[in-house]
Image 1 (cartoon, rainbow, N blue to C red):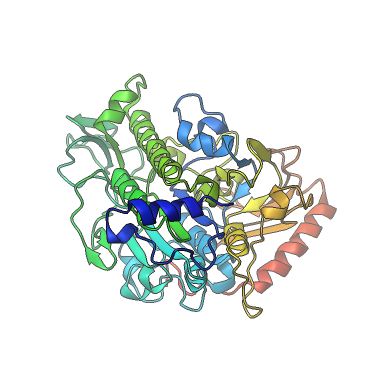
Image 2 (cartoon, one colour):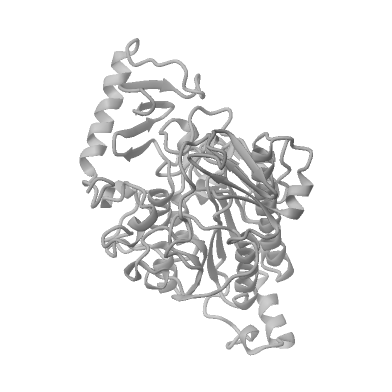
Length: 484
């Protein structure tokens, strides 16, 4: 018997406010599990303790892997934020509906720069099935009113619409802040530290104006937020769980940590004072804060008796930008923006206590698209025949009922950067920093993508090129691009 029955009883007996009272003694389908997606931003493959990083402890995130399944070949649909989130929200390769680029800055508010209304979101699908749905955090699927999450299936929204947000606004009290600049105050290059503000020219450009026309919103209304943003998002998530514990809910908690700007709260800066490089120390502070926040959410599920009733996914939206954040993608090659493994293979894990195995590692390829397929299946909400997705229901694979591969073929395209994975083989084109041409790798023997086999194995190259061409022909032209 699921623990929701106990939660219902507690609500009826001990409720202290109307918001916590279940209006029916027995919901229509009390056996439907909750679904929680915890999404980190720009977190590299090699940065968690469970992924092999001994420098920055992440016990709370690691506990999800320890109590569930960690995917060592977990992918996202794009190597940067917005199309990756479009894939997660729709269960479809974003290039199927022309969503290929990353709107940033003022581009977020332009008509057409957002998730098309023709696409069904996971939130809409679960809402239509009777779930309470909440988005807390970063949206980045269109910044104008047309694309507000409340119009895309979410009952509740607390967060921001664009690609990033300051964790604490100027004058940056209670944090150490690192800001990118073209030139230092003395006219030179390098680093400049003034109290708790560090200026750096290592990226060669200024810090983006993340907060311009990008307020924190509750629903559609701006609010003034005084807490460090990671803590504020956690506060809202814990409250959402408490208010919705008597009915099935879908919580999409999309942290902006560890995305820039680099701002570490004082307590965490002190915790990681042993890290000499201030750049790395701020990053560690942000990741430690994120980990504690995940711990608070998991603690709320335990406190409400819902842990065994809740499927929890944790993943990052893309690989870490190493130069920008110090984020490690080891042992993988590449970073955010690349179709090498370091750009598209991410920390990815799932927990459902009492249903899924505990402490296992799953090495077959999975992708963020599968969150939609899995959630729809366990919610008892099959898609209409007119609607197809590229994701699959992972449950038979994770329980051992199906020992095959969830995916034989995976595809990525971001303008000229594109790739296809077929079995253990991967064909890619990644024209960045003077690199051009197609490359072929066998990931089973060469996970770090060092040994290009395009010229020595022409037969396999031709086979994968044929698969890529067939898939590419199924995709549509981008609805917009940075140059249009």
